[in-house]
Amino acid sequence: MATAKAPLSIADRAKALLANPAHRIELDALVNEVLAPALDALSPENFPATGDSPEKENFIKRIAAYDAAIADLLPLTILLARWGDDEGRLQLEKIMSRIAETAPDGGGLVLWLRLRWYPVWMLICAAGVAASAARQHRTLATLLTMPVPEDASQGSSPLKAVVLPAAARLFEVADGFKLLPGREQNHFPLSEHLFAKLKPLLSGLLFLGAGYERHFDRVEVLMALVIADLNSRERDGHNWAPPGRYIFKAERTNNPFTALKSEAEDAGDAWPLLEAGLFKRSLQRFRTVSEAFGKTLSRW
Image (cartoon, rainbow, N blue to C red):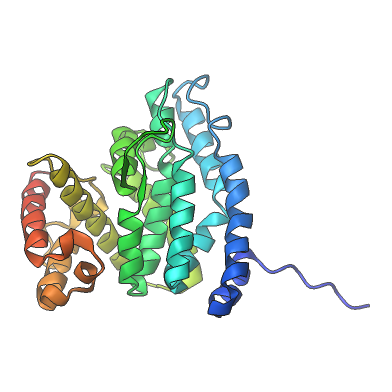
């Protein structure tokens, strides 16, 4: 008797569809198939901002529940960022904008409200590392600047680049990640948690090896600079950016920040990230932002 074949994984199905642009309709259907249950699982009803006290046990359980809710969506997002073309970028925009809708403001405990942005931030980080490793510069720029409502609970909420509300809200409670086992002494527990959490998945899907850390650091620094740039455009002199594990490497000769600056200077106006639309497509704008960011970095 013939043995029944095991069903293909989400990742294998995605790879087969991404290999042929003619399968864009089937790809859209797969994204919807995976996205719909994730949205249901992430609904505010499943993650209420009231009820549970902000204790260690409840925090650990909530993070585990968030991770489970996007377990199928995470590898799909990574593969879209790695292999996707224009259609792939449209699918990433759909994923990020819909997941952001599950993070409305409102009443309740600030910790639980702000933590609703954790899945968004994790998806951006994971897809960003994949795009960086594949030199998918347009995809990387899209991930950082795609517009989403600042507050999904308000129909008239202004649209902002997704990294702005995600970073502003999540990093307000980033020290809460010290409640996770092994993170008690971390200076930047959210950054360290994501680095460790995403490493086996990204390494398994993309075989990044030692390059994983380099691309994670590069994306973290780039996200910080983009956020500093966008914040300063909204209010002159306000160039706050989220800290991360890259700060510990600031004193190294070729640290992630100086490496990114060198990358930009070597390419000049032809730097692909400028051509993709970041920093107003201006090398001088990047220099201005990075100079201000460097002063902030030296104070951490």
